Length: 438
Ligand SMILES: [Zn+2]
Ligand SMILES: [Zn+2]
Image (cartoon, rainbow, N blue to C red; front, side):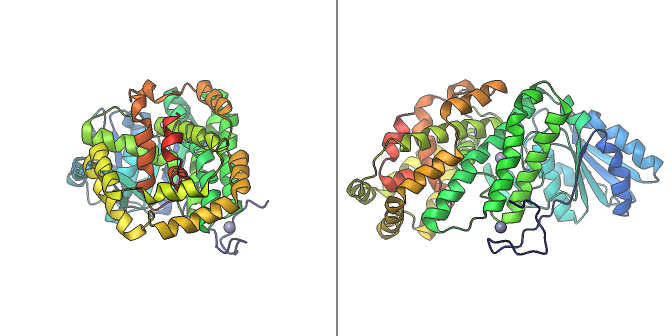
């Protein structure tokens, strides 16, 4: 299969595959390329944004290199040990900004990048991110996810114009950060599986080339799992490339499907509860890896189920949305409101829509099982990957009670208008029994 995406060509899926991620340098000493890019942007003065942990990685070096090339600089260093990308962080950046600066350079991973992407978008400045760790796949994303009034919100931003993946910096980051990055890559088992399932069940847009590009990027990372734990540079290169490729796959397809499925919603549920109730959370990649594990368990459980039309219809008819809304409010607090409101627009629980989906599911049951078989590893295979990189194999290891699992998974069906695991289970009338078997 041709996995070179040409922006001048119409793919068999009907789309032209384009990406904004054009300049991504992944090599040893990549940071040395910054003056060259700064000159390309005609920059006179750069504004460097970092935190206390990331500034020492490259901050001074970048300022010196820019100076040698006749480019000035100013910087703002966040002093917090655990920085949140919230209104406070955004506000202090605005207050410390030197408006003479015509280029933004961020040094960091998720939080610094999320803040800088929004800031560069608002101030209309070119933006270079120097990655401090191969920690998650959002480097290139055109949006930032930030808590606004303590609710996680997606905010318009811009993709970085240049992504610097300096292998000397990346392999120097703590190992658990690369493990989290790989955890985010593991999510791509579920994302591709669910993309295919929804294509089959709902006729949703799908591109096999983008799916295959994502699978190959993921597999290259999985094959390098052991090397990553030895902080090997060629393994790190594969991981960082994989994380960037996921951003490209989202650009190519124009949908978020290649990047994540139910396991990302699983992660979001834990984050929402953490924000609302102060309950334990872990990093994005760790939570996504756990979400992937439980989703694989549920999908594998489907193989032992015989779909039953009458049972499914009875289940859907007895579903009480008012009661479910009450449960969501209790479980998630105010974050539940937009989820409940979404149903008025989407009508996913309507009896008519259910019957249409159920017919397709029953007619294509063998194909559904085949997709699950083709896309997902067994639970044992998956757990052995988690063990190589030292990621948890149960939710209790991150401090969340196991009794909450069914409700976490059930809630993920309401968060967006995406057809994911618990919706298929709901359509079949087996949501409770599968979730409680975990
Ligand atoms: Zn295509
Ligand atoms: Zn992710």
